[in-house]
Structure formats: structure tokens, C-alpha cells
Length: 290
Image (tube, rainbow, N blue to C red; front, side, top):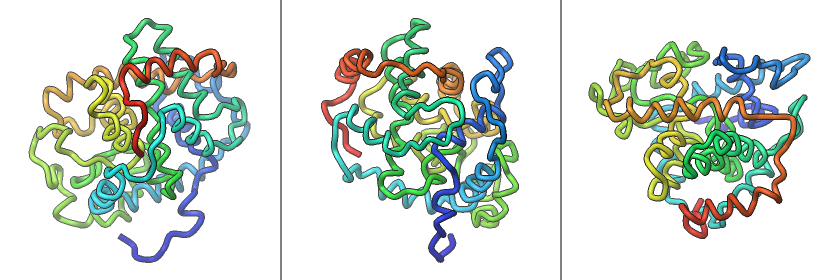
């Protein structure tokens, strides 16, 4: 890893945390859903910042970096608060760069959850929709966006060319390290994703935070909802076991709700809050450690 400190531009290459999510609608279109321009209307999409985001992400997300962040953040010794308080804490990250829909993070999560609820799924699935991005509170502890959001991928083995912007991995030290640049790297064939270290970000952080409280399908949705190289491209089937393949049916079921539930009409938070507070209390402790 580079020893020099990162510049301000490297720390914050995106205009907003949601910009990479908007880019997903371009890179992973769903033909059975409405076209992207029916959800977002950009007169002049700023894609250069998205490319810069992934240049940094792919350069610095190394195996050693991930292990360092796991050791730093999975102690959960930064803060303790109610889940709803964490959501309000998260909202301080959001800016007004979206040209069409002025939704804060809490409203996006409520829209995702309400779409799941409207389709009659179990309440734990609804709660998963509400919680799935809560790990983005990492940004509030000084973490750069490239270490919080973005598509995730395994570290410690060769980078697939099915990952978005694969050319940027040329600058990643692991791509030249014989311990990490082979098909299996530090892993065994079909070892199961539970034994694989993923690039660091909000998915893994929230999974570790909730792993003792939610049903296993919910935990797979949380842990792998940004792992597009697998749940859309099947690029890492050689690391998955049969249990992973079964659970990924849930990951794939969740993904459209995350991408396509946004609407210009924001939810009425005050009306929905009692329902979600009761749902949180059913599955999670009174306070959660960050």
C-alpha cells in the first residue's frame, strides 16, 4: 500500500454517497423494470467522479487493508445508540446533488422496506430492506467513501475482469503479489464465502453488527448485496459452496428492491416510524454498538 497520505480529492471523489448507486442502474439494467430515465433524469451525468471512485477503490482495497479495517472496526467500540438514532446519524452524510429526487438516506431505506412490505414478504425481509445501508455510518468515523460504498469483491485472490472497471486493479499491489493474484489465492476451491474476505465497506460492517440477531437469508442479503460480480456476473462461483448458491437466491430477490424502489414521493417518516421501531425491537437489542 502507498505510504503517502491521500489527497482531499482521493478521500472524497464522489459528490454524494448515492452517486455510485445511480451508476448501478446504468451498469446493471433490469429489463423487466422501468428504464433508468424513468427513475433518474440527469441532463449531464457526472460519470468522471464515479470512475475516480473506482480507481481509488480498486487501487487501495488490498488483502492487508481489509484485514486492518476488520481489526479496527469489528471491535464495535466507536459509539452506541438506538438503531433509529443510527439512521438519523447516517442522514448527516447526504447532500443535495441528486438532480431529480431529494431523498435522504432514511427515506431511501424506508422506500426499499415499504416496497418489500407491499409485496407481502416476511417482516424480517422488510427489516432487512430498512437496515441494509446502515453500515454507511463508517463515513462518520472518517473513512473515505471508497472504503465504505461501491461494488464489493473478494480480496486475497485474482480480481475478476467482470468487476466494474477492472483495468484499475493494475495499480493494486495484490495484482502483482503471487500470494494473491491466482484464481484461488489464499483460499481453497469452493471453500464457501464464509471463509472469504471481501473488500471492506458497509456490507461487511453491518453483517458483523447484526449476525447474531437476524435470519440467515437476511444476513446474506446484507453481506452480499453489493457483490455484483457474483450475483449478476457469476464470476466467483469457484469460491462458493452449495449453501452459498442456495442463499444467493435471497440476495438476487433483494437486489431489485434496493435499485428500483426509489420514487419522487418520499415516505412520511412520522407515520412509518412506530411500525419500524416495533420491528427493530422484535429482532435487535435496544441499542447497537458501532
